[in-house]
Length: 243
Image 1: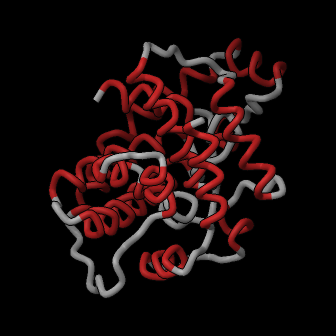
Image 2: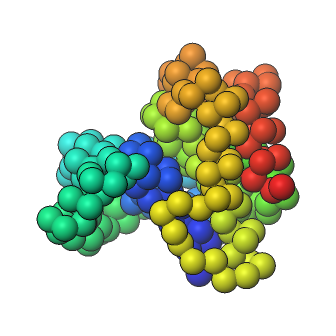
């Protein structure tokens, strides 16, 4: 899925180089979502399993690295030119490639365990804030499932906003399909989405700060979305991502 994979580049550096969850986690969650939809013809079930498997892979990643945050792994502020130059010149970026190679087999095992887990209760139809953004942007059910694991700050972790990540990814995907787009550290379209996001959230980035909640379960998050939670933010993101 070349276009889909290339579009993930904007999530590198912890969502547009903001230093939050490592890009490897966003990428693995999307792969999980694609596989979950392939295995399950019911979107709600695909979302449920994608979130569960994302949580498994995040635990696996944290066990290896001690953190899920890009900035803590790289010791780099990508928005600071001196810090980024130091990161490049000292060869620290090589460590990220080595980490990807070492963690990949563990990630696959963790994802498989999560995808094989059967939910005990699907009384509430599973929903993801990230999937709702993609839906408003005209995405397919497959694309909605691909970002499902982003919900609640990626795997309900409460960290960097999953709805923002979904909007940035979907915007890049739509552009990729129209023309060849090369990845750049500063992308005007992505910056526009980020600025609209910050304006709406009063410069809060983390899910638990934006919502005032720490989601304990998929059902709890689903009920929050069904009750209109983050609806305005979702609409703002979708609107700015397609204009």
